[in-house]
Amino acid sequence: MTVFGLHNSHEQIHPSALLAAVRRAEAAGFTAAMCSDHFSPWSERQGQSAFAWSWLGAALQATRLPFGIVNAPGQRYHPAIIAQAIGTLAAMYPGRFWAALGTGEASNEHITGGGWPRKELRNARLRECVDVIRALLAGEEVSHDGLVTVDRARLWTRPEEPVRLVGAAISVETAGWAGQWADGLITVNQPVEHLRRMIDAYREAGGRGDLCLQVHLSWAPTEDEALAVAHEQWRSNVFAPPVCWDLETAEHFDVVSRDVTPSRVAETVHVSADLGRHTEILRRYLELGFDQIYLHHVGQRQDEFIDAFGAKVLPQLA
Image (tube, rainbow, N blue to C red; front, side, top):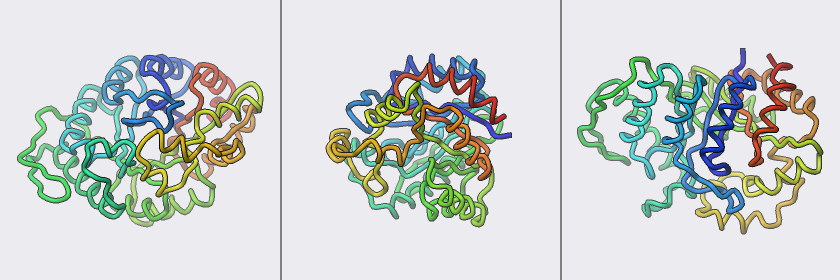
């Protein structure tokens, strides 16, 4: 049975409000949760960017839900530190935590001042980080000299159960590459045929584990309000790679998205006041074979969305 979870967007919502939202989601029938891990929002209008790892400890304690995070080790974060963070949360909350690993975006990683590597180097760096994190979680002492450097690192607090390290991808090529090392695949809503090709590439490369999807949506009592919310909050997020990877600040995103129209946003975000329409869209993703689907209402007001989808949408998909 497919799991339906809540995506918690730290770029948009204060962490205290997110904690209240995920508790409300659990009560409303959502059975999992995940969150972003940003240093910067995508737009000054979004206006937040709390430290996800601090929030995760509180959220795991406040609920009984399993949680995941999308993380980019290798630049802003040293992989040994991420291994320690993963190991601690998984030791405290056995079987309830997973981490998706990706190559990241300059808007979060440029803060270290180390320069933003080209994509093939970011891929190679991530692959080194994955091996380092796995070895540390397995109890090995790790030394490594490459695109990342590790000197005699060892985790003293580790989980008893293995932790899933999921591959984050948005292209068919990256999905195939992740299939070589990941314990699952996570991506975002895209055209159905593109998602089908991603799934095929991942499985054909030997990819194992769950297929996970984050779905951007906007719901409100009226179509106009749903579209206005999506345009106000998410118009800086319509750009395909490499633009979304390479811009460095929220100001940059706001400048390039100044003339983005509401209709353009609706190509990226599922916008509708009709809960039945949202149910149909999610059922289509179910039919593709996704095991976990995380709903991200792109507005900053979460309560009405959680209540409506918990009462009217999730029961139709059970």
